[in-house]
Image (spheres, helix red, strand yellow):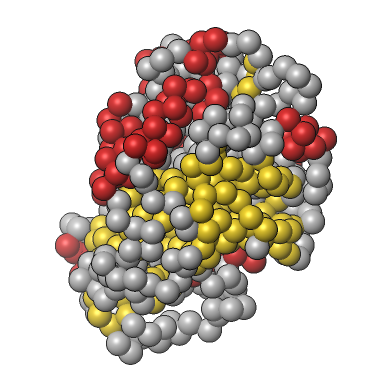
Length: 534
Ligand SMILES: [Fe+2]
């Protein structure tokens, strides 16, 4: 009955012990009749079909997530749940058989949040694995595994994590997640495009399964965004990865709409050209995002207001400064797209983070006492000239369209002697590694840090090692040291001496079952900014 999507490396979690309390008691507490359909046999289908997840580890805890949805793809967006709240119990144990339970409690899954639950657990030991599960209507969830961060002032020998982005469900299978579930990492960063808003054809693109008519159009309201999330989330490989690793997630553009900027839609013929309409649309998208992901309460959106930016600390090894480069940015200059000769992109004072987030980041970088400062965000910070000839052309959506914001960031890094900045990026649907230069047009200018861009999980379908665009990027940008146009993710290993990035690639995603391999490994050494072969 229960969907157990365990990967080979972590399967065999026990799920035997029953939690205290009864469904009848829970229903009575909710003012409901124990004799209704939610009494003895409350769920006809597994309410945990969307799996379980954990996120945002701190030294003493994390957030646990699930969403009760016995029919995740029900077109009304309710997941097959009734329009009233349901009691959910949870427990956390040191062992996967739950012999040593260290925390337990109960919460309510409410229809206003699509019966999602977000439980923040604290008071745990740092730097160790925990196992967790939920129970609702007499049914146990699959057992999840997660891990706390190390003590704040400790000096861990090593930190392993991965980062991912861009997972258009209809453009590829999530085989990369199946492999990621087998990796030995402490954390997975999702840097955006968790869903795609594009209209979907009747057979779900390369997935080749019938998709209900209600789930296919571009989402505009809460029900449609819920459906779009459920469609992406109801995938056994994605469920498997969430079940075994804590995630730290942040959105990019496609969680709302391609290339949105603050309250501006991209130029099209939809009614959200009116910013008031767009704000309503974005508020629905934000809420559905929160409902489907393991986010802490400070990151819960309130209408069109949301504070997704935050930091996570892993002892004195690393700080992850997690940025939101969408909600507070100025509009793309020169009408967006790829442009040459756009002076607007150089306008002083233009912002991509907004003043508050920018101050928060600069302060956080300045005060950081960790060896590594991982600036985890969406779009390329490095200059990306797309013109292989003598001219220059830039993508207005990238930091290139916000050149003065990049200048201010680099000035902070230099003025405050920020320790080992490493930018982690998604969005490009390609692997890429670059040196961050004080002046990108002068190869002799100082290198301030490095940027690693991770390819997509599935977006843009199957790829090739070196595509024509990739060859042009290498030809036009001396500071770009590597690119690859296959799907995959990046696995990173930090020590106090070095940061190593393994660029993991899959030869195909339009059919299932691809193997994974490391296309290349690159390193940057502490105190010596710049990319080197591993
Ligand atoms: Fe993307």
